[in-house]
Image (cartoon, rainbow, N blue to C red; front, side):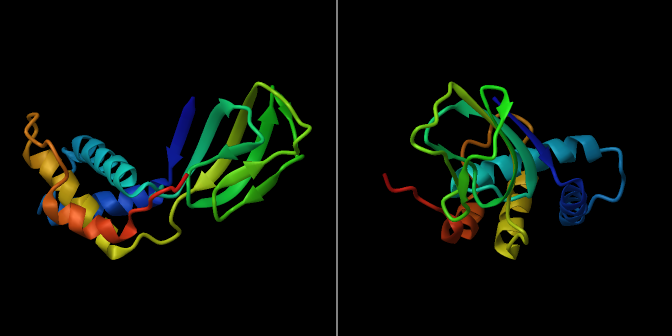
Length: 163
């Protein structure tokens, strides 16, 4: 199970950018625009395979000696194995992996961590704004894929995990 808390200051800035992009000056559509913005961020993150907006994340995962977390990983704030807090792990920031000793066992790992890009590149911001605009302009189920311009802007940031 995952819970995620977005950095509200960055979300507010993106909402302001989206309203400017759509030439909207009133605040009465903010809730709807925020929903479209979060959907666009999630879609962009799914496409590139990384967390874009810095967020606090709590994940509950099956125990393994290597537990993969969302990347880019900024920090690990707390780890519990079978509801007992532990510091018996190392973190590989590059791969976003928690490494436990080989002799350690358990059933579930609960991890609190921070992930996301410290600074969001302008092409990713543009792609998100284009997606959110498209979702806002087409409220019916007519948006089947990412807008082509968004795909082109996100493509250089796409990651592929090799097994």
